[in-house]
Amino acid sequence: MIRKVLAILTVLACSTTARAGDPWVNPGTMGANALPSVPVEAPWADEFTMVRVGVAAQSGLRGDTSFTPTFRLSAPFGKWVTVIFDGMPLELWWSSPQTRAEWSLPRDSGVSKADIRFGAKALLADFGEGLPQIGVRFLTKTTSGKDYDARRFTNAPAYLLELLIGEKFFAWENLSVNVYGSLGAYIWQQGSDRQNDATHFALAGEMQAWKRLNVSLQVRGYAGWQRDDKVLVIAPRVGVEVAQWLEIGVTANVGFISAPRLDGRLDFTFRLPAVLPIIFHAKEASTVPAH
Image (tube, rainbow, N blue to C red; front, top):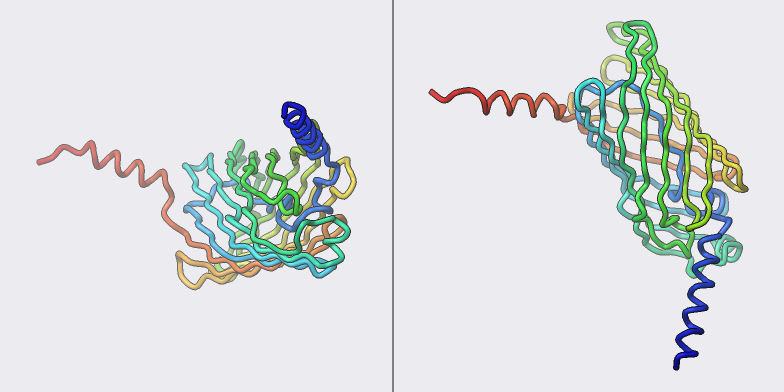
């Protein structure tokens, strides 16, 4: 009996070691939502709390497909700090017979728990009108994503730390243009004994016309030091404000190099009051003496 228990523990230990040292935990050898390039944002804070909900669908060259609901919460606390939560609760996926054979997948479809990111960005310097603004952003990925054996999610943390720089170039009566970019480090864990360190970069331009039409284009990606870990994404987006508090947007993310796939997204962006003025107003109201 003792020998059997020891044998089982030995097998489990060996399998854990192999899992910890798997060399393929990179975007070119995993599902579409496992290690995506993170969209860039401007260093300055919005004047409103943004709540965005939507759906995303991905398609790969070999017929692999996936579908997931998405969300994002961006809450500014004054001019300098913004708290960020985004990600997806789950993913529906289907892999082609070729992918299943090449990756040795245990099944060709499923529903997997997905990942959530949380963090913050901070404005470090505002040099005034007509000059750049500089900030930093830090995001961490949870370990909620599951189905590691099916190569859907890493079931391990990942971190993004980057410098943001941008400028509001001009704002006419019916047109405004902003340009911003980022450069930083993207790090993800590959088991207990190794990690991959990549350089994450992005450049974006956005235009608002007639206070209703929002058009933007992002070029972003990252490059690490291991195989199958280089990603380049071109992402145009068009949004239409149907109300002062609601925008409907469509985005296409076209991936190249290690992760050649097409990602299409439909989202609804709600613009709610900023958090800090509400807090201050509540405090002021509580200090007003009753008559």
